[in-house]
Length: 94
Image (cartoon, rainbow, N blue to C red; front, side, top):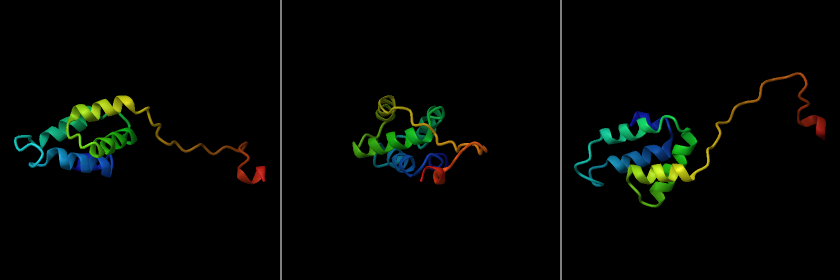
């Protein structure tokens, strides 16, 4: 579950539900690792949002998360702007 935690709390909660014996008793916990491995190329914000939506819909399968990921537009990772001497800042516009 440490790998799911690297995405965020929604992903961790979804994986806990997905891999719980109550969901499907014969499902091995390695299924979660397989799912997370296939999501490595997708941003953590998108995976978090898809897992949150899947939990709200009570969809505890990989296909539901994958479908939701196709519907969610890419969420850009926030990148800090570089410091530059020509940037005026918020005080300039007051």
